[in-house]
Amino acid sequence: KNQVEQSPQSLIILEGKNCTLQCNYTVSPFSNLRWYKQDTGRGPVSLTIMTFSENTKSNGRYTATLDADTKQSSLHITASQLSDSASYICVVSERGQFYFGTGTSLTVIP
Amino acid sequence: DAGITQSPRHKVTETGTPVTLRCHQTENHRYMYWYRQDPGHGLRLIHYSYGVKDTDKGEVSDGYSVSRSKTEDFLLTLESATSSQTSVYFCAISEATSGRNEQYFGPGTRLTVT
Image (cartoon, rainbow over all chains, first blue to last red):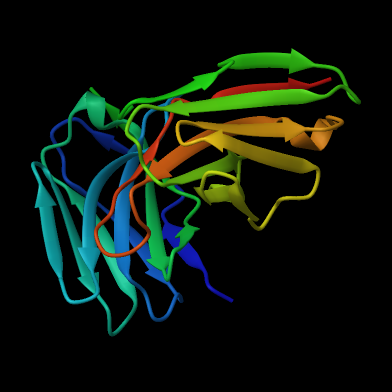
């Protein structure tokens, strides 16, 4: 069964600190892996997209990495800001099907 | 929200009543999707469309039907709403399904069935 699992389920960090979110998947083969940010009460917004041949992709303070051999991805947030408080969702797509993780809820406190 | 609107944004309805949610896009994307999002679950696909009048079921399609008579509009209908259909519903669009093609999400509709 194709699955996408994220950890931790929730995370609280101090403003200015870095953090790393994890995504493990069993989807195989896959077309691409995406990280989305979802603010409370809004739809998900794409942060990064990586194909199976890429191992890192950055978008400002967000850096995603991918290890296709171990089927793991991580999202690293540098110098966190209060506006980073959101849910972060990992999505793996394969032949037009999208498999969503349940997300990591990040809270950044002053 | 990439030219996607959903209506209504909030709705409270009673068990057994029909409900229709509308998704409208201005991007002329071929693919449109309806998802539901519930605590403890990832986004789950209800139905999707790959063109006008072309639709297919997702993993949680029971109790839902869809229609797409125009490229820009994708309707989701709950024929007889049940409390288990209380959820937040998201519409999404994409130009294609492979490669780096983005999937853009609407703002969501919060539906409560009492």
